[in-house]
Structure formats: structure tokens, C-alpha cells
Image 1 (spheres, chains in turn red, brown):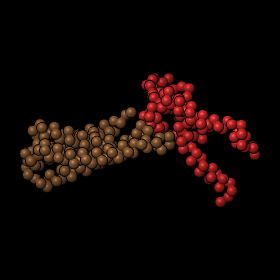
Image 2: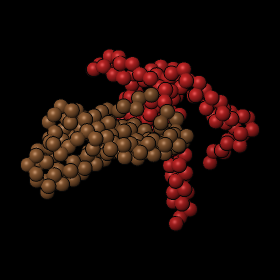
Image 3: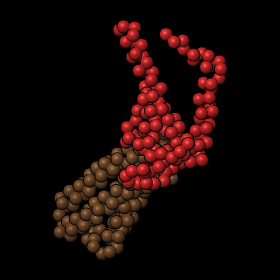
Length: 124
Length: 139
């Protein structure tokens, strides 16, 4: 296998594992400031992740149901700009606290100057 | 916490319908003394309840993967079967060969297995948050 092909294959394999669990982060991020309905969440996740994350509507609904069941999300039925009533999802106080704690423990460490310096990949 | 999901409700409706059919045909064939038909009705009821539970259980898991190792469906089956059967017997539609005592004995034996299932379910709940598997929750 050529070195370039091997690199791509390794990258895809790593990304596949890395992205598992990332959907939760992006969903929480999308609901951090405002409530959204499924299409808007999907659009936010895909656009803001620069299309590195994609999600099917059905699997998104399934995840939202799970989060709603454990009480980190809730929804209210509202009329959208166009079309019928939609479920607008929002973070509950527990969900907000969970997201803050998660970011503090797992994301903010990447802002540590030493880590930032290590991550700083030279442009080729 | 919502443990009565839409697919569990649909299963309860299907199980109620199947149990009413079962009691009707069982009583009828017992009255006319057709042992083979009684056996076939019992086997048909058992199979149809199994496949109905399997079908709705699978759908239920896709809708919301509640980590209960089938306990809710087992409990629903137990309640529906025994309540419908008791009502059937008490309303006087049953044959002379059926009695409430037989139902109580079978419910007692079944209840022991249901209790074992419940104990196993309670033990496994330690691996869950609000009945959802911890390892699957943020997948």
C-alpha cells in the first residue's frame, strides 16, 4: 500500500472512532443559545462542523428521544416560519450544566497554551 | 421517566385482542370436547404472542432503547393474559372445564418467573441511567 493511501485509510479509521460520541457535543452546541427543531439542528451540525459530521434525520430523532428521556433536553410544540407545528428542542438546566461541565473537563484543556502549542501543526 | 412507550401500548392492545380470541376459542373447543383443536389454539396463541412481542419489542428498542431486558413486555403480557382471562372466567363465558383456581395456580407459577426476571432487571439497572444503557447513551 502506498504511503499516501495508508495515511488516508488510517485517518478515516481514526476519524470514524473519534466521531462516535461527537454528535452529542454538536447537538448540545446547537442548542446552547436557542431552541431548534430537527432540521435546524441537522443543518447547524453539518455546517458548523464543516461537514465533517453528518447525521440522518431518523438517527437524530432517536438521539433526541434518548436525551429527552434522561432529562437533558426538552421540547415545545411551536409553529415554524413555514409549514406545520414542530418540536423545538432546548436544553434543560440539567442539560446546560452537563454541557458546561463536559466542556470544562474535555474541551477547555485544548486552550491550554502548552497543548495549543503542541497541536499547532506547521503548514506544509 | 416514561416507561410506557407507544410500541409497548400497541403491544398491549395486540396482546389483549389475541388473549380475547384465545379465551373464546379455548372455551368453545373445550365445550365441544375437541382436544386437538384445544392444543392448536394454545400453540397458536403462544406463537402469536411471541411474535407480536418480538415485533413490537424490536420496534420499541429502535424508538427508545430502554435497558430492561424485556421486563416491561413480560410484565405487560402477564397482566394482560391474567386480567383478560380472569374477566372471561368471571363473566361466565368459560367452559365448565376452566376455573379461576387453574388461572390462579398458573399465575402463581408464572409470577415466580416474573419475579426472577424483575430481580435480574433490578440488578442490571445499575448499568443504566433512567433505564437507558450508560454505554449506549452518548454513542
